[in-house]
Each structure stands twice: as C-alpha cells, then as structure tokens.
Length: 134
Image 1 (cartoon, rainbow, N blue to C red):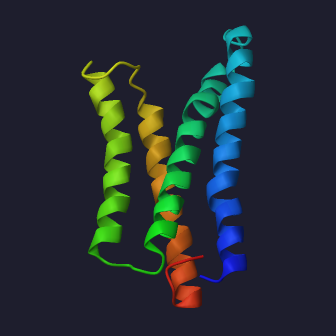
Image 2: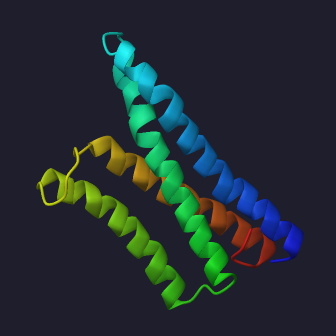
C-alpha cells in the first residue's frame, strides 16, 4: 500500500468509523433519556446503542488489515475472526452474567453487519486491485 493510499485508508476505514461511533455515543445517548417515550424509540435506541459498537469493530478490523498489510495468510484470517468472536463473546458473556453489562441481540446483529461489510469491501478491493489492502 503506497503512503497516500495508507493515509486515505486510515482516514476512511479507521478514524471515520471511530469518529462516527464516538459522536453517536456522546451526542445521542444523552438525548435518548428524554425521548424514551416516543414511538420510534426502538429504532432510535438500536442505532445509538448498537451502531457505535459496530463502527468501533469495523475500525479494529481495518486496523488489523493495516498491521498485516497484503498478507492474506492464516494468521491474518485468524486475528480477523478472533476479533469478531471476541466482540460476539462479550455479548454472550453478558447474557450469562460472566462479565458486567446488558446483553443486546442488536449488538450481535450490528457486529455481524460490520464484519460482513468489512469482508465485502475488502473482497471487492481485492478483486479490483489484486491486493488485499484498500
């Protein structure tokens, strides 16, 4: 990955998802308390509570892609899948009261969507550029 491509990759696939997730977390969570009786609260709360986590997972997966660069080997795949399993595992452990927190099925759904999006984007780029990196 050339230096300009690396910088763009970091901006769009690491910093932007972190920024979006952080802004949603910081801005809208305070507002959620005052809107808890509105009809659209389920959709609103699903987005403000689950979307930031999925943005952070996507950024983490993209960071791993930077670390492993163009190596689509066993270890790269291992770390990508392990990161996804750890994200899902936190929710499963919360459901069993092994770790503190509130289990949320939507978190698992959003984690899965972030993982699938990461795979699709990188698959498209791999086919287009014949390289794993964006």
